[in-house]
Length: 301
Ligand SMILES: Nc1ncnc2c1ncn2[C@@H]1O[C@H](COP(=O)(O)OP(=O)(O)OP(=O)(O)O)[C@@H](O)[C@H]1O
Ligand SMILES: [Mg+2]
Image (cartoon, rainbow, N blue to C red):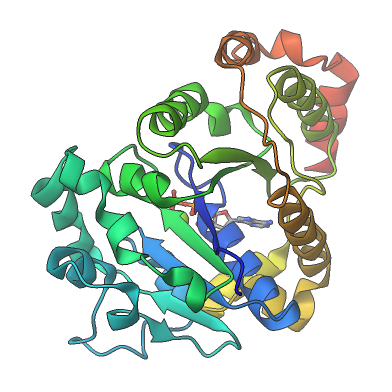
């Protein structure tokens, strides 16, 4: 018998922190490199994952989207589209998805949207990766209500942790009230530069996340020009020749995720300790940076 699909929601209330980059590159590695069957759900009306996985041109104006599937209450089989990449299927989105928030709001019915859509998904897929909009809204809550895991992508900068505590508190509430299977897989750090400011900040954040019972996923993903090249060509960075370093990082990270997702007793984040992190990180004197580190960072840039 097939194992249950691992359903993972990628979320961060802060925008532009690498959520879509993580979803699309990890999907490519799971599907093409590791031969797993993957469904990517683009739950962001910007449609960035739809574009990055090369399906925007494949579905014509009348093709089903996440919104048409949710509003007609059909199963995933009716709205998926095959991507050009082996083993990867997508539920695409366009800006019409914005209507979902007005239509459903926070309601018991709204919270069941993804559960209904994904009923029986394990017979076709090993992994379902859900890309989300940087906002706590009904689509995020419904995705969390149907997931086994949530994963928080971020950059090694304090702005990435704006709203971090609110997001984890929201997810913990959904764990308590809606979906006891939901757990935090960890924090994924993307776009790391070899500068002392990043190194020091990562040490600081690593120490506090550990104290808060939150996994900091390793390795970190280094900054890479291949990500911008991939964006221009509408394909994942790991699929192009110049993306060797980013492929290396994302592949090791994907293997870390697979292992962690098999853990029987996942960690529960300590919200009080995350509150301490929130206070401390607001002041860079707490990060352990020396004046000389700052000078060196400027030189390197
Ligand atoms: N490893 C990396 N190297 C270089 N650039 C990166 C890397 N990861 C992400 N980026 C860039 O950072 C920007 C934000 O990434 P991305 O679109 O994945 O973030 P997001 O969290 O999905 O944004 P949004 O909240 O708007 O959906 C993009 O321009 C992307 O190309
Ligand atoms: Mg995005």
